Length: 270
Image (cartoon, rainbow, N blue to C red; front, side, top):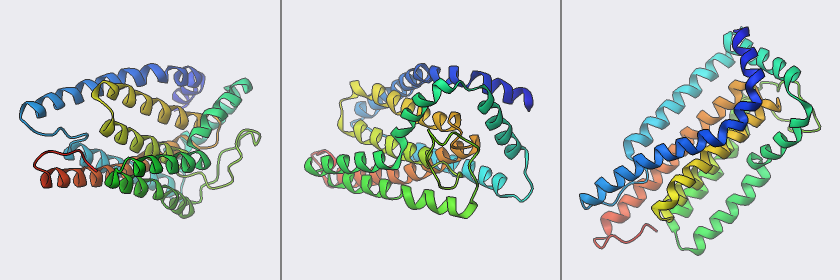
């Protein structure tokens, strides 16, 4: 375990810098598969889905299971391998991370903060209402409103203290597990991507997917490097956020299909 911890700590910043490339490659791959499914659906005279029901159910189930496994490992009375890994990695990062990187990491971390997410969510909700996208607006509101009670409710149950960190760059005072920034970034940017995939032409889809993966990844990794959270806090936050996101996207897709069934002319989803 020590070898793995040392390797991650040494390469943490290079991995953070490499995220844009990984996001672009992933966005391109997912975009190609989406375009292929879109062509098949249109050839069959069907309206293409943004996400297939099977994909939504699979991702949501796997995310929930991952969160449950991590929560069980964290919640046990005796510290297990995951807790020891978290502690060792946080200590190693504290020693190896150059102080000059902290301001940059703290700036990126703000993109997952509650004030930013709440403000941006309200603006997006207003935009959807002005565009008369009623069902999308409802699903957007449900997704964003659910972030805080989910995050703070789970935090209150586990009450895990944060790792030692520099208070100049990490001012959070709440519990550590799971990462609220990870939940917020998964839900906010994930739902934003879904909305944009619904409203924008297909030529923008790969860019939207890549940007979503990039922002969510940078925010989560920045929280680990700032030592605002342990590694498992962030992974659990992503898992929890993804599970909630899939529920909200599943609702949005169900409403879209219902409207398509009611509209023989195939009017756009509203």
